[in-house]
Image (tube, rainbow, N blue to C red; front, side, top):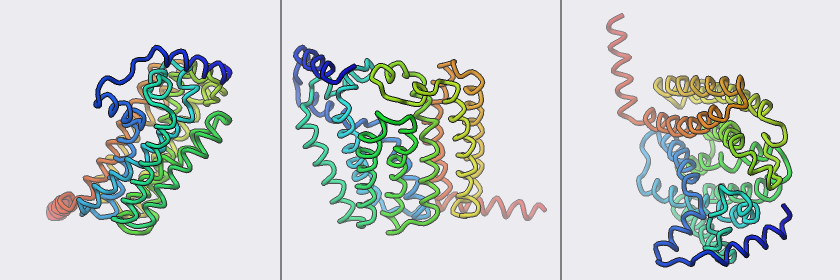
Length: 327
């Protein structure tokens, strides 16, 4: 669909859209603009990173500041993404009722909102954490907006792979906020999220590929088909699992509990990817994989946090001592 037709349609659609009736409705629209469900997943990986960096002793004030800053940074990036993509969002039924294509928020207001979020994010991290974490948050925004949204999304089938760098930066921000530097463990978390992103997003893309085809967005299922996409999902999943185990060995930043959690969760992930590769036209399998990928990242992050807690370390030592006595 040509952009001028899309904008014409948008104007027609906006003219029939009621304005906000209450302040709460205005707030809801701006929150929706930030894509809060995506933000929540990013913040979970940030918490895991902070827990690992602080060995379970995270300062509550620093945690709160970093989470608020991370939410603002991600919200700003998502808002600019919505602003840039409002033409194709209107053309797709799944996104047509978002605040911008529906006319509930004006583009210039969305831009001012994004700028305000950027300023808040950078200021909070720079003042209460450190300049490295603040700079990393800004890099995440730039990668998502310039590399993914502007350069890759509408032009390359590997858009989500390279653009996935942006989604993998929150763990770096969390680690840097605690330590002021970036260790190999922080970069390992970065790679874990980076490798997780293609299976997660391509499974979704398989389900809604008709929408992407309608607006000429070259997502991998649209360009290469479901079989190729399913094979690549399986390949990325296979690579992901051993990378998650690096946190246990050789990096040695995790105790015994985390590798067990990573192996169990990873085994289920690989099994679901294998089933999808065997039946790539089965969109229910794609849906199942997509939903599980969210659960996988949440549980893996929770596993990291639990494994880093002092009480867990103490309990594991007691169990190890009992086993030694029995032997």
